[in-house]
Length: 442
Image (tube, rainbow, N blue to C red; front, side, top):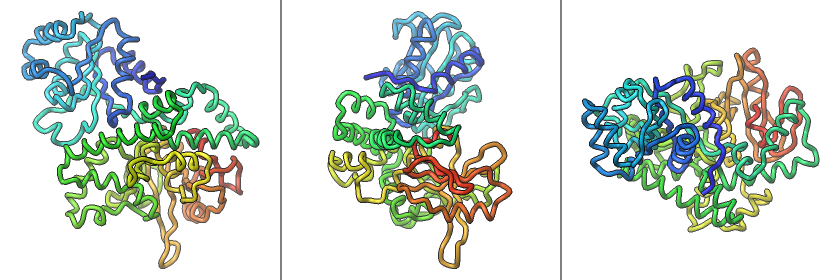
């Protein structure tokens, strides 16, 4: 499988330079998002030697080394002998891959970092779930980052295109439409919607140029996630909540409604299930903000949220999960923008994915329109000390009543208002109409 260029590599370089062994790096992320590949590549290119301990597939005697830390010299000797690698002081890296499978190893980080001889990177999926940390001390010497699926620029890089995002930035900065090039830009972007950013899916596309085979790869990844959900929640509730995400978004409800999916459960049980779903990193939660202003986390409504899939390619496949496979005809119609179904929820999901990849925490806002209806702002982000309200449409329809009403109500807090849609970049009064492929430039 190909090794794709990832932006997180630069973050690891910065950590290595600044930390000088004083902290370990913990990379969280969903299964199959590329954590192990990134860290292995980093180890090979940036260190003289390294040891990768895959706790999903390592002998019990290696795991047992971390039960007793009184003799670190012996631990290091045992590791070098087992992996046939010579560790060199301040020139070697030890990787704890899928560290959630060996909680004692994660706890040992405190003492290994204090020892100072080597650098340490941990990777993990479902890593923060309570049963993986019960009875151990979480080391304060960890720096944490989340690895996401390939973002749109990384996807273009994988396809051998290093120029598109640089050129789009120039058009964006000048607020100039692409004109004749817009149609191709949207076609390229829809390909990203369908393939997604999971490295396996992108690799299948590059090898076969066959979207049906890409769909098969995505189904394998989703089944892996469903198996994981069964392991952490044998009741099947987390699995069902996950599978119901497309239906909830397509219903255009103002929040995710768990009760129709899993029945009448207590608030505590719902919160526990949602925590599992969130910490799996397979999803992204967007909470309602009760009083939109900079510092929206202070006004987060914990009981009202929408849920998106972390990868829109997987989301598209999950939309058609009721079939054994997604017809290539459906993919071709999606690619050519000719599928009759309203695709607003797919565009909403990819915007959530792209904003998250930029580091934005996701919030939305609703407020009364009249006695029976509400206005809704799909996403609220901040730039500087101002709010940027965002409305998402899957068409070229230019109406933005919710944005207008929101900006009238909170005029002093607004930096700019943005409608993301499928047509060319333009302005409509003080509203920026932005083609979806320019979302990462916000």
